[in-house]
Length: 118
Image 1 (cartoon, one colour):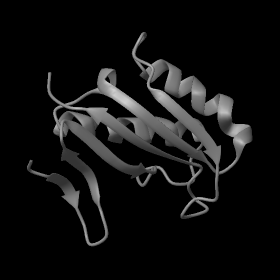
Image 2 (cartoon, rainbow, N blue to C red; image 1 turned 90 degrees about the vertical axis):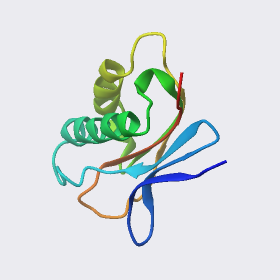
Image 3 (spheres, one colour; image 1 turned 180 degrees about the vertical axis):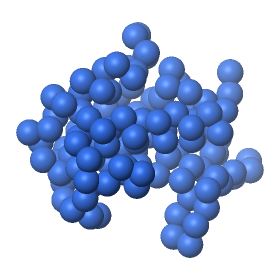
């Protein structure tokens, strides 16, 4: 099986497709650092949508999501955006944890595994 890599940099690829799955790197709000949790979550989910589309997938095909919050008190604010983004009946397996992120300007990071193809 062939491995496909998207947006590959020195240390990582933003998406890797293998065996009918797409694995997304943890996404942070590079375009909206320091903004509200709502703003960062919206920014990240837009990036995820774009990456999934590039890989031939979409939000209805997400199998698993891992969400890291810098502060668990932001859980409800993040969920308000997440709940509006995930299509009804297509909620993935998901874990949300509190963690120190790569930079203090980031409040949230989201990693995704999804199915590709039809």
